[in-house]
Image (spheres, rainbow, N blue to C red):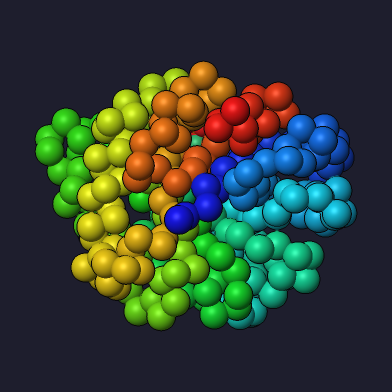
Length: 248
Ligand code: PGA
C-alpha cells in the first residue's frame, strides 16, 4: 500500500516569519494525520521553517535544487545547502519553472539525478497545457516528460510524481476525479515500462491543480491518486489541514 502524501507548495508566498507562524498554526491541526505531510517553502524561509517543524510530523521541502554540487551558478541553491537544514523533499520541474524560467525535461532530469544522489526525495511535476489536452496530446506530452525527465534514475522507488495539468493550476478549474485518475493511471503505466510494474506500484503519484478542502475527498478516493500537491489552499492552515484529513 502506498502512504498518501499531501504537500503544500507555497510558491513565492510567506516571508520567513510568516512561514514559521503558518507552521505553528498548522502543527496542532495535522498532528494526527494518517498521511505524510510536507511543506515546500521558499528557500529563504527554510531556516525558520526548519526550526518551526521540529518535533512535529510536518516534513520540510524545497521548491527547486540545482544540478551541480556547487560552483558559479549565481542565484541557485545546492542540495547540500538544503540538507544542512533538514530538507527532505524537493519539487522539481514545476510548470511555473518550465513556463517562466526555461526549465526543460533535460534540466529536470539533471536536477532529479542530483537530488537522488544527495539523498533528497524529488517531487517531479509533469502535466499538459489546455491546448495539448484539447488536441489529444496529453499522453504524448507525459510520455516525453517522464521518459526524458526520469532518464538514468537508479532508485525510482524514491520518486514522487505530481501530475499537474497546467490548465488546473491556480485557475480554480480542477480535473475531474475520473480525468485525474485516468491520467495518473497512464503515468503509472509509463513508470511500469521505464522501471518495472512492481516498482510502478510503489511510486506515489499526486494530483495537483486547484485541489482544495471541498474536492480533496473525491480526488483522494480514486485508486490511482496517492496525494496532492497543493498551492493556494496550502497557505491557509484550516484549508490545508482539511486536505490532510481527506479521510475524515
Ligand atoms: P494550486 O497550485 O493548488 O494553487 O492550483 C498547485 C501547484 O501549482 O502545485
